[in-house]
Length: 133
Image (cartoon, rainbow, N blue to C red; front, top):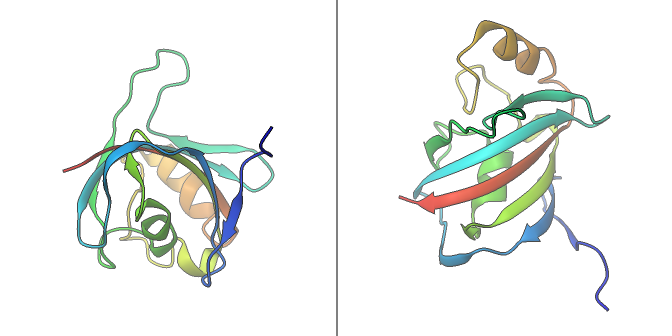
């Protein structure tokens, strides 16, 4: 029987676990991708999610995998993923929300304030890649 999820540590300090591999085309730098995510503090406290935990409805994010739009750590997590794939990642603040213009950031005031108030600490993202656009 195989062991639990394998953890990959990148040079940037990002730690990635593949949960589900996914199928089809791999996301590459410069691609536009559609994905859902749950963001938590490293202690497990919930920060924000694109999926409503009660209704199950989602508001996926669509972003280009470049250095202008998306936080670098999350870009590194999404590159190489395939549609339907799921990954869990610990993103250090140095490749996280280093600027308030980087996405994904919730539009609502409360969740936005909550996320940005934790921008100086490692964040855990669970990401599901829906498709490479």
